[in-house]
Image 1 (cartoon, rainbow, N blue to C red):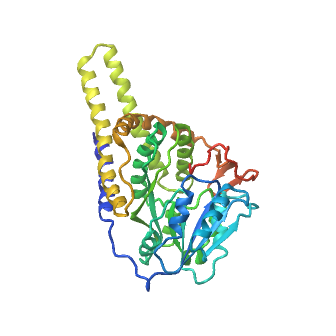
Image 2: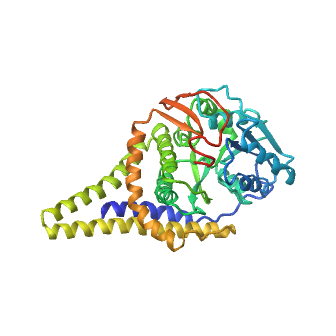
Image 3: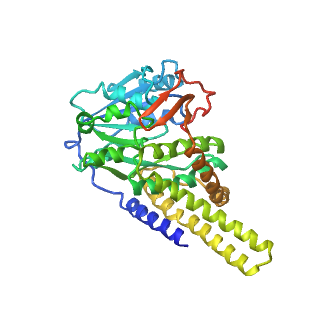
Length: 405
């Protein structure tokens, strides 16, 4: 029960932050000039909604830089079909130069876009193609950056899939635990991320990105060395409504864990948490089975009660998180009801399944030396020793399909 209590304490801190999400936003006079960077490879299911939201921002001074992986990329046709229907005068489309082989295509795209910005830009904001920004999304990021102690500001993701599958429910449970750790360890999320241009101009962050697998997880350590921090913006819990299968989730979560392993000093804490929260229940279950087999009813009952209480506690502590995030989502006028009766039943089954899948993902990540991301192979020799394999334009039948995972 001590393990459940420790997890509950972290959840409590996170929920308090979520419930205090409202703050006064910067007005038009105070709003710094911004450049929003959207990197595209593949036609994500909610890309059209992402672009529409981006072009409808309630913000006075911003430009949009879209970096498309290739002219024949399916995202390019979606982009060009939408731009004529909106006020897109401040949208610049870049096509990725794939010659850089020392980092991920995502990092290469961000660096390429940043190097085109002029001196008037005061901060960049990034979002992923599965992020659907509401009207004040950019203003909320700018507000967080107003603090001189802050070098970057970040939101986080929350899943409310339209189609509730085993894979998407396991992802929901895992992510609910992950966002609490990300909040505790100040791990930034590239799906909604802003960085001050002062940081980019006065440090070697662009050089770091040019040899990295991801652009977000490293920011905690990098900014701490500059006496700056990553600010979490509770109002920017962004809803993702995509579904996935269990195989797709497993590949995705291994990449998420890999970035923590490579770039964040709390990796051992993340690893330890994962081991404890999976090994302890499994060990208790094995003891329970052993007690039952030898006929020790008293021990079996106590072990069953302990295991049931732990699983119940892990399930229950998700409820205040869901409640707090639904309040934020509802304030934006977005749909917040998604689970249903069938989803609740699947959720209860997904909790223990998530623990097993998480254990397998941790084991896989500890041995991971290469990864395939959107059809491109990367060999990982170290945090700053990334070797991208042969480039090829995105194909919809690639290993991870046409979804953001």
